[in-house]
Image (tube, helix red, strand yellow):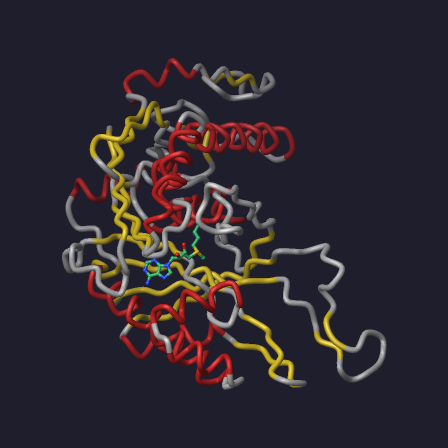
Length: 369
Ligand SMILES: C[S@@+](CC[C@H](N)C(=O)[O-])C[C@H]1O[C@@H](n2cnc3c(N)ncnc32)[C@H](O)[C@@H]1O
């Protein structure tokens, strides 16, 4: 099995090189309107924004920044297949205009506009990112009534183009069964509150920005497993440091990433080179956690009824019987900005030597600990 990953340096308001209805899933995080780190980028795309900010006309600045993003959402609608989902990670912004402290609700502005464009809005995920920052409590301290609650969460908006995706051919139905996730993963992934830390934002002096604005690998990794099939194509129109592409590689999906700033090219290549060898560990870790779940279930409740046909280990439901987890073997750049990932052949999966259920889990997998 192989997957392909293309990086394109261009403005995602024009995704002309992607065909209509060619994308199975979008996972992304745009620049957040009204967060200062993105003022210059938005101003470069529409110089009026700089003037609005300068004269404190924050409502116009907010709206103009969103109009830029709206053009990208419209392009996504065009390139997504019917039934495909878009997962958009976005945080709200707070900012003081003179002595008036305000929230700029990016998540509801995007949801409203996407609904107008024809997307169906599905229940979203609230990503809680607790912080220990000493300045997280804002406002008048212990004196009422000018203190503000902390802003320690972001959203993952989930939008669908049209109705539920229909899997018609026997091949598609099989691929869907092979792309299943574990029962216990369903129980935590499909909860509306996710609680995990953000990722380090430091970049070094060779890099184009001081802070990466990257999301943690776990975020696209989960979403890709939840909402696409092995072999599908995932798009990230705001690629940044290429976290989505790495997650797609680890999940056995193809991907396309667009980034407006070509200065990211070197950083992205270095990151893929450095992290490719470790990508197998994410699915190996899922196997390991599943085996722990099996052991605990067997010890405290009962033996599981079903057996996975590829791995030979027990699973909770019949839907997990054909589940496969792609294990990355290697990644190479096959042409400028096009990467190919190759996976372990399932015929040789016995090499993984997963044994010991009920007798203590012993996992002898390459690179696992
Ligand atoms: C919040 S960051 C994404 C970070 C990414 N999720 C990661 O993990 O590294 C947003 C990225 O979108 C890029 N960007 C902003 N406007 C864009 C546009 N119109 N087209 C393409 N990329 C854009 C920015 O340069 C920035 O790298």
